[in-house]
Image (cartoon, rainbow, N blue to C red; front, side):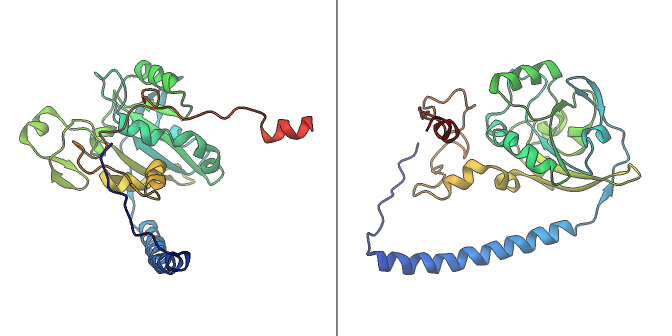
Length: 256
């Protein structure tokens, strides 16, 4: 970790409260701006998906329509995991660590969340089992899905030094890239692409970052080789979370 200076002014409770209330006003303004931005996002035009994508799932082939399940809204997380890779990207894994807990909540709001990678299904399944994840995950190894949604770049594109990522021609260090794409399926079964986000547009999905933004050291990434170079797969951190022993609240109540 970097040596962030956390020395701050030490003040009275009254002075702290005045400073906190002033910052609260800025936080509320930001919340309202974010609400307005989200409203504008929902008003963006849609594009009909004409191509018939066929994915490989744990139980066989799945169409894009199949990925919706019984719901009308689909979020696809473009997980960086190339066909030749032995494991998925650590930064994508940090984000994916947040998926499982959201699944029942999203399902009850008519939303399905699925991860898609170009790695073949056996590699995906082995990695998913290793990290203990349960969210749906399919392979796009045999189709153009990742290419069409600008999260995979050819050798020729990489050789030019610029690729089409985050809606601009830019340098990118890998032929695999992260992103999230959103789709809607109407009652006639037609599918529409409604939104995609890449790069820092994915920050809002990283719950751990939101927690880090609350603490004195923040994300503490200044001076690192690159911003997320500290991230590891959760089974490879030297420091693991402490486990609290004893009874749960339910079992304690039963034994009282």
